[in-house]
Amino acid sequence: MFKAKHSITLLFNANKVYDRQVIEGIGHYLQSSKVDWDLYLEEDFSCRLEHIHEWGGDGIIADFDDMNIQRALAGSDKPIVGVGGSYSDPADYPEVPYVATDNYALVQSAYEHLKRKGLDRFAFYSVPTDEQHRWARERENAIRQLTAQDGYDCQIYQGHCTRPETWQYAMNRLTDWIQSLPKPIGIIAVTDSRARHLLQACEHVSIIVPDNIAIIGIDDDDIARYLSRISLSSVTQGCFEMGYKAAKLLHTQLNNIDVGHKRILVAPAGVASRQSTDFKALRDPYVIQAMHYIRRNATRGAKVEQVTDFVGISRSNLEQRFRAERGHSIHTELHNQKLTKACKMLKDTQVKPSEIAKLCGYPSLQYMYAVFQRHFGQTPKDYRTEHTGVLTDMAVND
Image 1 (cartoon, rainbow, N blue to C red):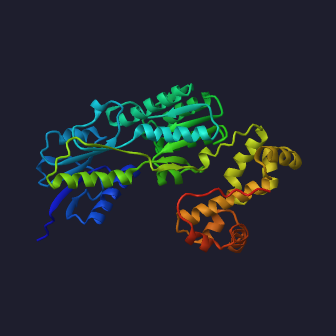
Image 2 (cartoon, one colour):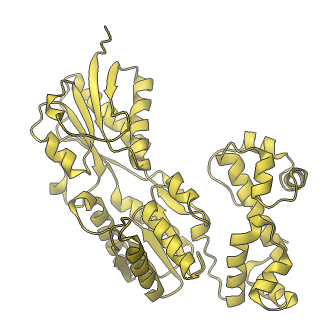
Image 3 (cartoon, helix red, strand yellow):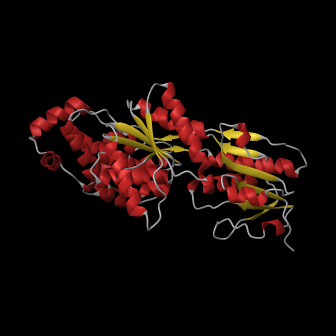
């Protein structure tokens, strides 16, 4: 008969990267500590609370951002560890051991990232107020505090819930809001999902990202990133660490050690800087138009002539303006865009080099090999083997 030392249930709705990474951290603790736990998690990774009090296990790790879960576990005599967001008011924390993502630090990381880009106007796109989004209110309060300290105003827009029947209305109102904002401006989205709304709305009304509006999200969610033409900058939460520490806290309790209402605050893991905040404080409207076209079409094999045709001025005029603003030629910018995407795909995916060459606008795999040999002194395959982590600056200067 199968019998583990302890039976543990995980109460998470793992349809978000946040929950999945927390669960991954829990799993890593199990592997590294060699604890003997039987983990119960619904087969579809959803959280179902029916009959939870009839469950005869030994401990629970749960998403305490979900008030339904909190209420369902109230009065439970099982060891519980809550996982969720931080609160500025200590009275808002649940009365269980608790591991929290630092909401203030998340927003601060996004805000400081935009400031380093040279922006001095800021806005925040949140979600409508309800009890399930208390973490969003904390993030709104954080951006108010941070911008006020620096003497900036910050426009906050909560928007609307998005359902099939309200989607078009919600996007129309979001479009109205972004069109009303002064430009250029940096917008922090409360999640990557909301950041994707911004990217779609900007594309619909031809607002240039990042030159008119720079956008950064929170979560670093692959799905949100891949569903957008422009790669999304995002703050990475320390979810893996949260899961690891939550499992460790529960393990401590299962060893009959009282931890009280211990709180652990986990800082962000970092900022993934991508195209949506690649703001260069461009002033020349022709260069802004050219960069907009290049970002969208460089990896489709765009040529310098196509860029100048799109902008509508002579090549010599645009080249002169481009060099004054960007410090290099239009051809070099097209090259940089393709090379940066190729490097990122080699590091972050398992796509074959031949397919990467096509997706990045190179005429052939051999041509891409020649580019890598000239620029890095190695083949794309060797580059993939050698490099891991965050993409470095690949810019080439004339």
